[in-house]
Length: 144
Image (cartoon, rainbow, N blue to C red; front, side, top):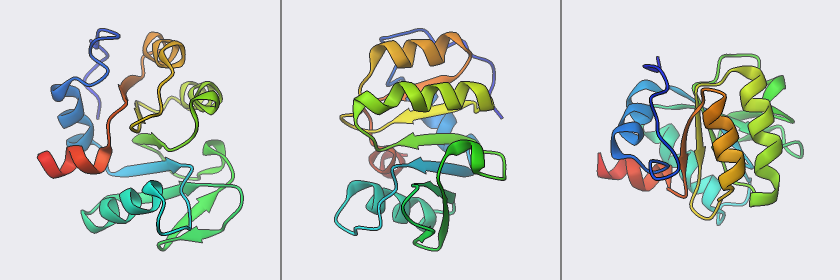
């Protein structure tokens, strides 16, 4: 699992070493904002993660299952340990997600391209969560 939070911020929100660590150490990915619409980036990234051996759970209160992944209304309702939370929500929603990540002691938080909230990322970091922000998990996995 995680090797301690020696992450410095904010310049390291896209640290290549941390990105590699998350992709190598994580198996269960909770995708917050997973959509059943095939044209949405969250759907594409989740499908890609599943195809590459990750266990994906969805966090979407409006659907029960997407791509064979069971969906839950909130992170707190996911009944298994989560390694990383991958967020596909508007920046205004990030602070609430960070509160759940901190409360549930989830080690990694990944904010997708365009999902930028410096204050929320800093708060997560200060609570010991390792954070990647404004990067695409699929694209980074393709680079590995």
